[in-house]
Length: 241
Image (cartoon, rainbow, N blue to C red; front, side, top):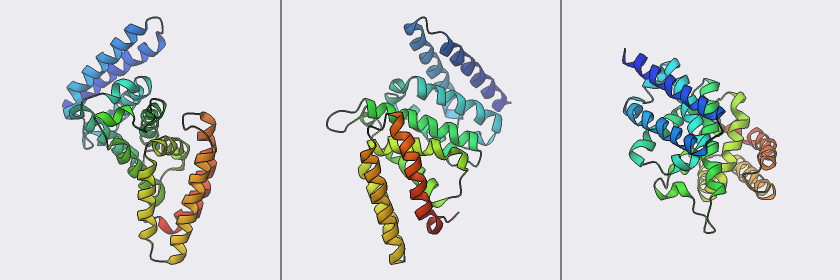
């Protein structure tokens, strides 16, 4: 019965959220609605775990609601306390790894929206708002996304969304991307494979730097093409699952 009550509350919050999206007449009211949704999530948060999300109806409503929140109010999500945000982000990470393409797609799109906001709000020194309370959050997502795209079988229906998220994450955490790809190179037993990963990574980064700011749609569209080339080059000998 607990799952059914959780599901009912999530559906209510999602109904309020969708009503809020339609009503553009009062910006202050919209911000208040975001606070209502955050309050509702704070009540549910201790109960929403990766295990709870094994229940498909609950997972569907949670990912739809949290995806709306991240995409509509990334500034509020960026300043949430760690005690509340970290478990919710763990659920996004869980969704990222699911075979269900819809859950994976919504999770990746929420991650992309959060990272894209950080790119737009980035300071001259490379710092971004989320780092203040959650310094490792985007690195965590970058690692999870790369592991899925490089080493695992995944639904190609989420490839474009994954590419978009990767570009936004890379713009925030390029040093981490370089570190992770160096680890991939070093893990290869064959010299030919090490060189192939090195060359493919260098080519991808060159294209990223030439494509313009990560917040621009054109840059994300270009990366989709380059990422397909990159994955075609390295996945045949990297995929393990």
